[in-house]
Image 1: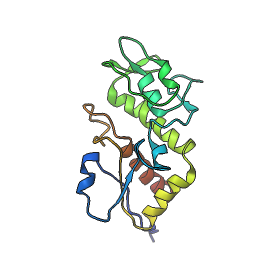
Image 2: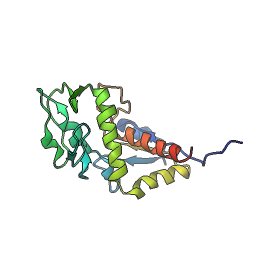
Image 3: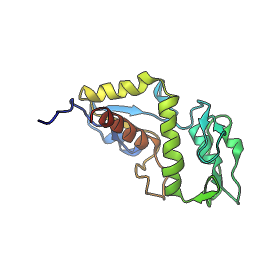
Image 4: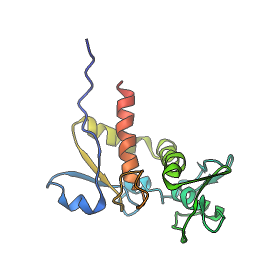
Length: 181
């Protein structure tokens, strides 16, 4: 006899420029730094503090974006100053991201640096009721269309920045499945 899972409407990533094409009445959640509280705290730019920097034991950053920008190797150097303060973009063409002594390409850096760091922030820095609220809405059958300022939900697409909303959607859906399998 198989066990049936509770009703669950999977969260859906929506590219920013597709939000206006969603049907009237859709539940649309902006998780960019421009969003209202508490959803703005889901932005990688949001200052939480104490976020471990992958590949640099004992080093922390105030933001996920600080980790990402600080570990970019530009002209042969990382920039640890980005670990402090609000998240900011870093100019220049990166040759990769530093992970310990390794230089990672963009897709591998997303897999080993960005996604684990963002998920660490979700687990350790975000008020539990925010994530639980998203899961509870999904359990009540509400399809949540989640977006930020980006359009790329594919971590393998190295031509565009990865939208953190896509990582959040995978995280929410995975938590539900992990709890119920």
